Amino acid sequence: MTSEQYQSLLQNLAGVAGHADSSALLNHGRLAIDGVSVVLEHNADYNKELLQVRLLLGALPGDQHDIECALLEVNYMNRGNCVFSLYPKSDNVVVAMNLSLGSSMTAQDLWQELSGAVQSGMLMWQDLIAKPASFQQENSIARN
Image 1: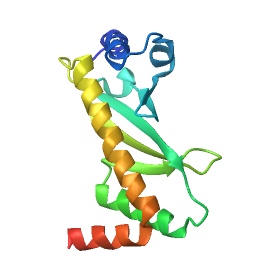
Image 2: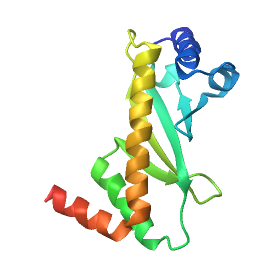
Image 3: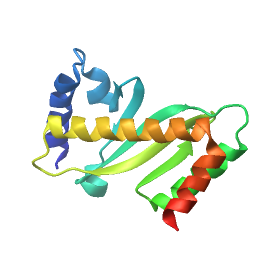
Image 4: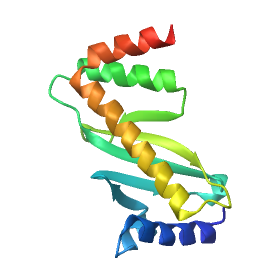
């Protein structure tokens, strides 16, 4: 997907998402889905068929050790499909993932992919902060 095609896709995505003002999406790749901040980054010079998506999930709670361990384990188990990290100079957890952009991808297709990623990311995040130690146990049992 060329940069021009990507810009057109974003313009259409703004309409699908119900954003009257598409400037934040077009200029900075930012939108919100179900209250989750989403940042899209497309670098056609690097890989024109790849879209990096970052979801800002929320801040780490006070007792962080179990959650940090669970996040690292999730990163290991996902093997690069999605990566949890911290937003620079904050305790805000971000999940980054790559989506494949086909030349025939429509704004509706992208909206469905992004909405699904937000729902999955938020469910995983809510499970992690609710019970990080049991999340680790459940995931280690599931992979054995």
